[in-house]
Image 1 (cartoon, helix red, strand yellow):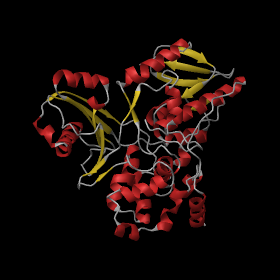
Image 2 (image 1 turned 90 degrees about the vertical axis):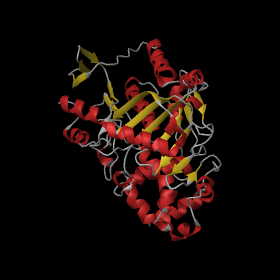
Image 3 (image 1 turned 120 degrees about the horizontal axis):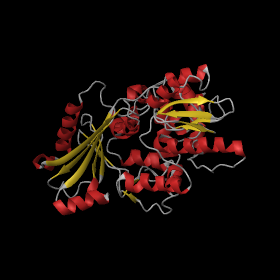
Image 4 (image 1 turned 120 degrees about the vertical axis):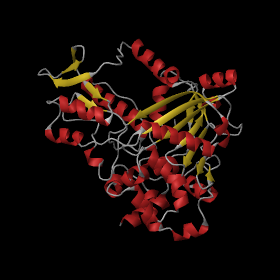
Amino acid sequence: FFRQYYNLRGLLRRTDPGLERLTALPDYPLLHGSGLRDSFRHVPRTPPWSALGFVALSPSFRLRDLRAMNPVAALPLLDVRVPEVYERLDGTSAHDFLDAVRFPRSARHLAFEVFSRSFFADPRHLSAAEMALMFHIYFLGSAEGLLFDVPRSPFPAALWDPLAAYLGRHGAEVRTGTAVERVTPRPDGGYEIATDREERRHDTVVLALDAAGLRSLVARSERLGDGSWRERIGRLRTAPPFLVSRLWLDRPVAPGRPGFLGTSGFGTLDNISVLERWEDEAARWAARTGGSVVELHAYAVRPGAARDVEEKLLVDQLHRVYPETRAASVVDARHVWHDDCPLFPVGGFTDRPTVRTPDPGLVVAGDLVRTDLPVALMERAATTGFLAADALLERWGVRGRTLWTVPDRGRATVLRTLAGWAGR
């Protein structure tokens, strides 16, 4: 939970005013298979010194690499504006953009691949606009940097159960495991919601679904929206699958291992968490047994890959990164394999839905939704959720919530001027 997630953190404060269910990790360390290491701990937080400080402190930036870069091609990063950044860069892949900049390959793996793979996508298939937006959010648009907080407890206890209880106290009904079959506009302006159990009338509807769920529900709900809107929804794509493996080991990892480590150059392994460093349930188990609880993430797994093979490959890479785990036995394991993240492909911005739809009482929310605010990932999901609620509240003359984001353009006048010159 990055500290630039202002609106998401505002939502969490409704059940945890002091955000006491979150705890700060001291660093965001990165390790490449070649042995290069990077860290965001000592990088200045004030733009533009944050970006310059990362370059100066990172061992992956060498003087000869910097001399070989194309500074003019990199200037669009200095004044990212939404939605103009999509007009300028959505037709280019993140990979091709970095090639044009002649960005050092070692630094590319340790810096920009962190951004592109956080979208569960190969840089060759990701819009450069999304990568540039992330650069703006974390380096040139905010003073929080790339340090982050994590939940002290498993997600049900830290997030979902308190939020569900909060909704219940306000008269809402939370129904999990209930499939929605279709949504049908009614002549009186409301909507008929048909589930696998019953039909109910509602005044308004928010579709907060993943890409595949949105596509399939709209396809089954023939009267929603208009033809153009439905065609765009039908073209939404899903990112490749991802794998999360949580392992309970019979012995601890080395004492100096960080609570979180970003990785690159280790096959499909993208990061390792040592959960007893920050999660209470894992810490109690580790203290009781003398073991460790580690979690391995693999984003953008190759389509068609065999799940059991990928699970074994992740463990093999864990042994490579933390050699002491070779001697450990796995007491228990849990694996999650999903392909429910949106893909932001080259040229795909115009197909993504906005919060408002052709039906005034129907709105869309989620991380796949396009907005004119500089937000991404979980913060985009939370922000578009608030925007969807605000759009519906207008119908009853109710003022919505004030939203906060990083600035919608570069903060430094000199850098904005340079970027404008490059654009011309």
